[in-house]
Length: 373
Picture (cartoon, rainbow, N blue to C red):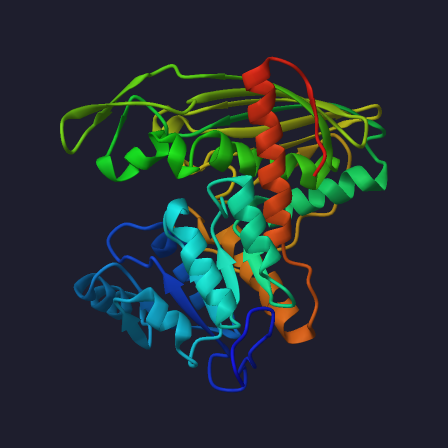
């Protein structure tokens, strides 16, 4: 079968381990893939870590050995083209996503890419339009956390009444006055990876998962630390992107919300809270994972009775960093077997990118923006 974009290549799930996953960016020393994707894949029946690809031969060999992968590649495009790989996971920096994603789609592979999918709405549109009938997943995994899903069900049940208002606070250890040089790209406008697009994108996605589509936003952004020290080099660089984002919005459900998003806290002080008040009650989602709302578990509390959230498909990773990523893989695995499309995908990533753009436009113009995504 020739591999053409929009044509699904046959997936072999009959062999031992099931669907064969290849990860681009699975460095064994320090990587998001190490603390989340690898334990998620290894913890799910029906998935097998078949290959890893990193920037050079030595790190690729080390990653394959450390993670128990069948093969390693120092050329990610060679792994993408390999017929022994069914699903390509892209866990590298945002500027490298486009070329890798388009190559994987062109090879007829299912693709799981970290958020943000692209550096801009235009780039995200290009990748989303290339999907066709292929299965894709975007790393907006917070919405699949069992606590978030139960919160949405609790609201839908009517037990807390009409949703009135929500207050979200999200702090992260990233985007502070000091950081390693490997993270300097977060400071660059051209990278498309910053506090708003990453942390803000995850926060807004959880808001929509619980309260429904955001229809209006107003925003304020600030650069509180314009000079950033690169700790390993002892150099200072100019920060071009905001390290604080404040959002006021309205959702289709009629609820209004505020989101206070800031970087630069110590890892032990990182917090996420989502407090929703309804006409008949309240609910709250909280987490203290240093990586933010997208990582680790979220605890649900309420003044009304609710069934406990379902058990997560997998646990493990850095303080449970594999929990939400594992939910994405579990959803994608079902979709691949059943021919369904229920996993947040590249079209969902495009919706999120347009929402982020609306927030950025509101902050730039100093006026409320309607959201049309």
